Amino acid sequence: MRLFEGPNGLVRMFDQPIDVDWDDATLGVIHQTVMKKYCSLIHGQPVLEVTLDLKRRHGLTGDDIEAVTCDIFQTGFDIAGGGGFGAKDHPQTKEQADYNLKYLIAAALLDNQVGPAQLEPERVQAADAQSLLRRVVIRPDSVFTAQYPHALNTRVTIRCKDGREFSKEHVGFEGGLENPLTWDRTVEKFHWLSEPYADSQLRHRIIEMVEDLEQHSVAELMALMTAVHPRATYPARHAGIQ
Image (cartoon, rainbow, N blue to C red; front, side):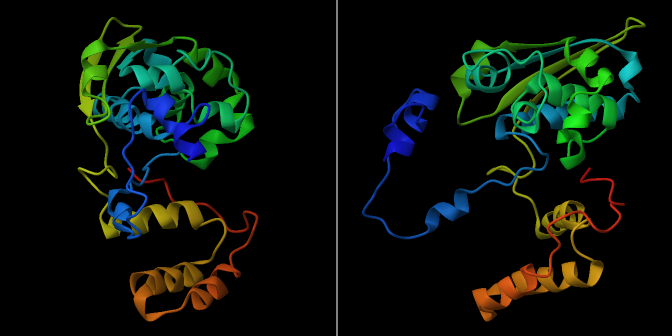
């Protein structure tokens, strides 16, 4: 109950009541689970999708960027944009970076991806990322706020040093309830994230078992999982889910 009603619980975070039927012991809520495509908070997923779309569509690099403005719903601004949960101007750690829209946008523009590598402290603290994030402004938008949480809306505007400006509104994200990841995309993400810790044969054995999980025991799956290395051991060649 404290998760919902306690200090900084979900009721306070969303500023609205959350109706839970505690007598319903089914697991139907699993069908309302989302899967993040990028290594960031949920509220950052649509922001990163539209940022990377603008970057790739127009062939932008970090050196092109004069300034970026991101308009987002109030909760996203409060949690990750410098609002009620505090400033986001000097991230130094993973925990500060993955809940920081300024850093996430900067990392996407510089690296063309936001995965585990972008949350390493060395990357977060790098001069190019710190410089670019200072040129990112996050603003709450009243229209987007009125549609939250039923819609995760954002607008990203990129102004280039040569005077060009690109802007796009975006709703939701691949992996959300309205656009869930397909099995193939889920497998692609699994390979991306697990490649340094498991060789190809082990990864494919895990995928095959999960795909047919009802025919296997938890003990069988855990036996495979114990073969996964706790530290990065194999080369990471996957470019990340695009």
